[in-house]
Length: 407
View 1 (cartoon, rainbow, N blue to C red):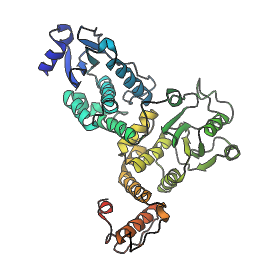
View 2: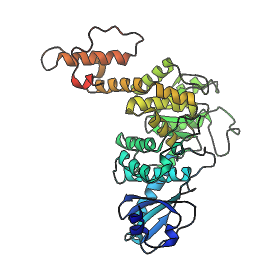
View 3: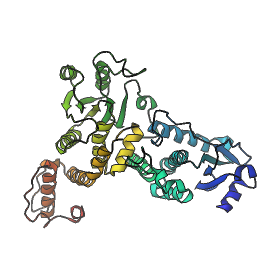
View 4: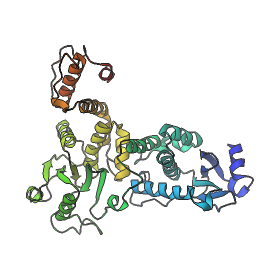
């Protein structure tokens, strides 16, 4: 590292005296510098310094809550502008931070996500670079969470879920709509665009108790849903508005009650029903509990695990990046972790069915262009897809092909 220090920072003692780490992101072009104290670092003839410490903090968030998706998009565009700015074309760009775990983790996440989104770096590669160059990401201080009672989300999981969100087109950083994302007036966030939106439970009349700047009247949600192809609303909390069914039905919006206790995990029956509705409904679905954070985030997280094969931690990370303070109750986090493998298997079965032209009603023969292996495959997928309580199988693996067998 001393060689890198000399090559990048030269002999300028003011820039090296309290430097703790210097991480190379792009050789001769982009670096992450970690200092022992926070102070301003002026530009030099060969270096441009900038910092985001405190820029993206929200005092209402927990000390270790990950930055939200809007902050991430802003940073990526901000840094990309610097990378292609003629003023800095001949300079190395140094993002500097302090070695405090909060500031370093935020900076590492931002610059790591930039490397993934813009420079197409593998998340494991960039995490290894950041991990090997600073102790903060090796221990408990790396956790994005609420302390010892939280199911910690580490830096690698946050970086990995950014990669998966791009891969599965859950987010498009090129045309990201800040106005749509930051819809604080309605307290509503799209977790999966055009598919799943989380929102605070609406009220029918006065909303002064909700807080300034928020307008969560039922009629305003109805207007937004009609304009954005949201045709199903799933409520997870007890009734807070009496004319719920009538008002939504009159607007041609279906409604489903899947209520369970605040701070608790859903039952298996509720989980099955939610996933069936989510997978079988072609239009967008709005989900809410009282605040639209815990119960709402838990069920949407289960959908992410099943539909995109995310890990439980990655699903929690993505929901929190989109909608901070979501899924903070340990029982809900543990529920997703316990059901992770089961959700993967169900998702694999659904993806197998998608390969058939008519899905689970495709007729598969035993001779001709199809095979017994294909027949066994579709029958197994049908069985899992039905989510029955009891399965009676006779030699089910005798004819499955290699792709199904490896599941």
